Length: 481
Ligand code: PNW
Image (cartoon, protein in one colour):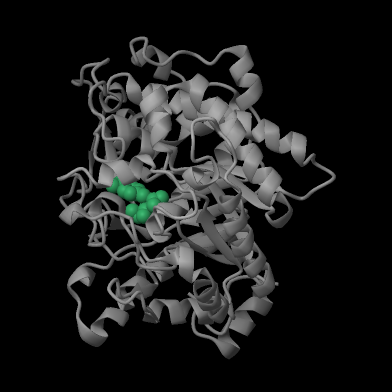
């Protein structure tokens, strides 16, 4: 088979061709693309409120209109079809579906997403639906303390998931619950750089958030299993966690252990409860009482609550042991970890891209997916996000804006690393490019373009960048990586 592919690769394409069964996916999220913030019964989310507070986002920019995908979804799906993407990953806006605190289902919201799903079906593109990509209804924050209140959050998510499964379940096989809960818990409650913008109790609120997310995810998975029992359906559920590979700074035992702790605080804190029914060793103790062990009832709900492993990964960093930090002050300090992008020899871990946190480290994703496969043996791994904004891209003008060779090079590197792992037997089935379109990049507003498709934010016109056309050839197997 390998020989055949090799031959195939040599004869009709440049580079290594992906196996025919491998799926390519274009990823987005509701608040970043939809716009139509006040239409058809939608109520404000924490991101509507946060982005309208002066000083919270670059240029005070918000997602009121975003890229108007709410109205342009047919044209947008046509673009995905032109490139032959297998899968469209997008999220539902909870405040379109349950816009009021009585959790009454807004039929207009359901109807909108049915039209999107029907059109995807017509075009032969499979949906991968995220229930929650950070846009919690504002009333949940005001009435209950948002992602901190496990009881209220679980109740909300149970009602919301039920509405989504009942209203849309016939059209969706692949579901995920939360997108990047690590990012929403840390940026939302430790640093306060994203909605709801809290850094009042960095020592406890990140833990409360993680706990509430896990319990809510578990409750949704339980409802999912009841509605779509195994054997009668091939539907799957996941939680899209994110992680940057944590490379040991030196070969010392301390730094090797620091690397594991780095992964504990980032990834294992969510996935160990799901696969092993408990938090990583040492986390409860080091938290000085802020992280409570899971109760037997919680373990029952959370353990075994995913069918596939969904991973967002963009970058890597070095990590070392830092015994001088004080426990109990913040989530980050409790890990006793130092992080850097510069190696002990003074070289960079990779070239930095436009976002200051995003270094180009293709080998890191290779190590990360091998680690996940070894630790959890998940059976199937979906890379649900990967991508970048190219250095300088926000300032490109004229024809330049479509000439994103740097993006093609980045994807080639990461996809080669993934293909190496796949050939070794790591079961990655799907790769999602973040993002199908330039869009609202949260606190960075419209200043960072992650799209493979350029969007003129004034006219809402779309133009394929070179990387989109490259994806088209990759998907058609007329080119490799
Ligand atoms: C992810 N950081 O967010 C999200 O899932 C997307 O919605 C987002 O657009 C994409 O990655 C690109 O940023 C992140 O500062 C945002 O480390 C910021 C960070 C990480 C992930």
